[in-house]
Amino acid sequence: MAFLIRTIAVAKSGREISRDRSLETDELVVGRAPDCDIHLPDLTVDLRHLKLTDTGEGVLHASSLGELPFGLDGTETDQADIDPDNGATIIVGPAKLEISRAGNDDGSEKSIADAKAPIQIIISQSKKAAPSMDPAAGFGLAGALPSKRGMAWAFAASILILLLSVPIVTHLARDTTSQTQAMAGQSTDQVLFDSAWNSGQLSLAHHDLEDNCEACHTQPFVSVQDSACLTCHEELGDHASAPRLAQGMAPLPASEAWQWAVAQTLGQEGPGSCTSCHLEHEGNVRQQAATQEFCADCH
Image 1 (cartoon, rainbow, N blue to C red):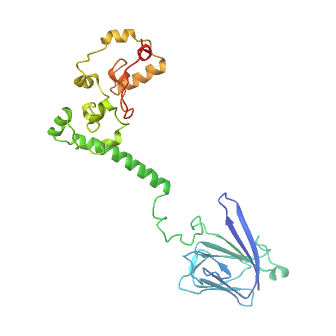
Image 2: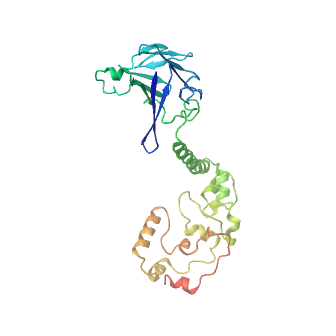
Image 3: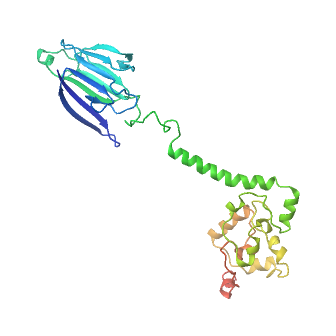
């Protein structure tokens, strides 16, 4: 009996790729073994899963060669007779085998010439199958785990929550003695993971305070205040009174004024505060004395 076997695959772009081959034989073996007439490389398919045999009367006899059944027109069975003129659909693992008489795909009445036409078997992927014909499909952890993108976002969120929540919780849960030591400028290690919040190294002048953030950052989620600076630098005093500094400063550009407005809602003191000129966390370098040009930027 002559068989026309057409294999249809779908590329990643969605384009169908079709390959035809002809075979003259009285029986076809379908299975996972490479020497099968119809090779289906999937672990859900037996090495020799199904045999299609010509009964000599234009009818194919389908029989299972192992313990696994096959699907036939929506039902599972291990033995069946198939009339190619009427057509039938066999499901084996992830593959769909559509059996018909070549030239009689439209279901019209067959002629004498059609009766001698080869039997056509169109192999495509079943709708219930996975998108790929990977032999390990269904037997690995990939199907049971979230996607790589989902896992990446989950791990990123976990790390972010960990670095944000642990310092906050350990800060709020400290005992009174530890809080008093921190306010007095003494180092304490009861706040965990606080180094994850560090934006850079302190200057050489403040290097001794690197393990004691609360010497300057006296309130959680509030920018450094002038009062914290004057705790150590009280002998310096103000360069000038706050109203005089404000009067001597040039008007701020609209964009910079907007930035200051946002910063002040988050606890940042306005222009003229210590931190508006004396910046920290700029690296392990010596702080340079302000030049006349530095002063002239504002005055």
